[in-house]
Amino acid sequence: MIYMIWVIMMMKKRFNSFIHPMTLSIQMNWLIKAVANLRESSDELFCRNYDLCDLGDVI
Image 1 (cartoon, rainbow, N blue to C red):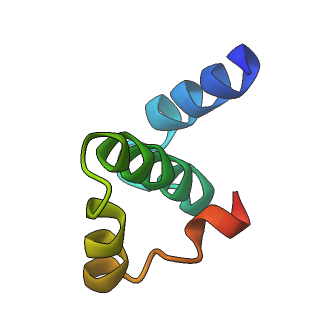
Image 2 (cartoon, rainbow, N blue to C red):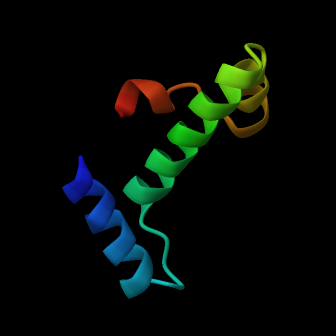
């Protein structure tokens, strides 16, 4: 797990102008889970606005 975080950090430094799709999806998945813990209905809001419902199935 620590290795994965290190890889993501290195990718951010190496590709400042280019966001890797996998890195972006992982970040968005963490964001949705964090917000969903605060408000249960927020994950539905994210799904409607950003079409990220299937993100949890991929990760």
